[in-house]
Image (cartoon, rainbow, N blue to C red; front, side, top):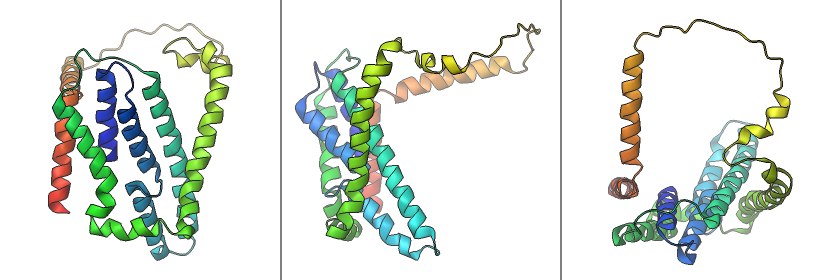
Length: 232
């Protein structure tokens, strides 16, 4: 649900003149939920996973706990990058978002906030995540990821960003890839079924264009939400 709100929120930002405060606040909450912040559905999910680690074989609870912490750091870095790109702005849609899209996004954000209270099975780990013994393991990876994101952002902007042309990250690895170049000439191979491959790629591109439209994404996310609520 939080990921669906992030997708739809990106479309809302693209359809507006600038990053709205309400949209950015909703995106920030959903991003923190994915990272596992306490008082969110992500914090309840991470706590539920850690509660089940006690049933793992000897030695696994410690290793899996470390891996969960590293995963939370990586998710925090990814969400920090996502929010930075949203705040910096990007492509602007031709038409502003319609009321249905705004309502769908708001519904996803509200459900993400109220999810631990709506689903009885999530209520226990949600309350457990607020205990002092659970707060530090949940907050430490997020704080670590935030510090790394700020430090890396400043270093990248000052040292690296000016060297990279738009859309050309290969510049960063070119100094390590200067191998001796030997000119070689080979006859062009004949690949059977090349026409079928081109038609398949054309069909896949057309399908991706249809599925990537924001109204289609909204319908798909709401459909998944409805199925989840029916079978939960």
